[in-house]
Image 1 (cartoon, rainbow, N blue to C red):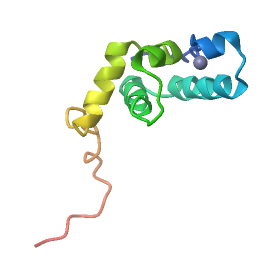
Image 2 (cartoon, helix red, strand yellow; image 1 turned 90 degrees about the horizontal axis):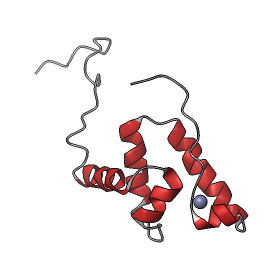
Image 3 (tube, rainbow, N blue to C red; image 1 turned 60 degrees about the horizontal axis):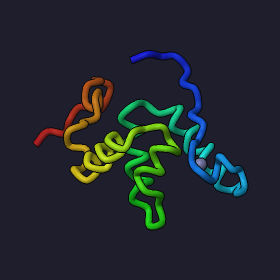
Image 4 (spheres, helix red, strand yellow; image 1 turned 120 degrees about the vertical axis):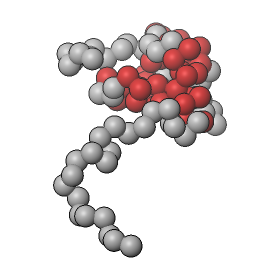
Length: 104
Ligand SMILES: [Zn+2]
């Protein structure tokens, strides 16, 4: 994985292209700003969550907004529905800095 600063994806949705709805434009820019700070799995999980909100845009629209492709969005959603079991937290239990486990 590269450590280069990721450019913020410019939203391609109709609302942002026309620029009429300032609130939408600002919201989509914030989505992409946040995405620019996340790693790859986090990006698809976040958009997977967005895609399930009650009035969420379709995957096609989310793809325009975020620049992720529909397949990636679907994958993020599926991983969330599987409780991210395929994506364990790495390093969670590796650092030996904690207290010793209580004895039983
Ligand atoms: Zn937009």
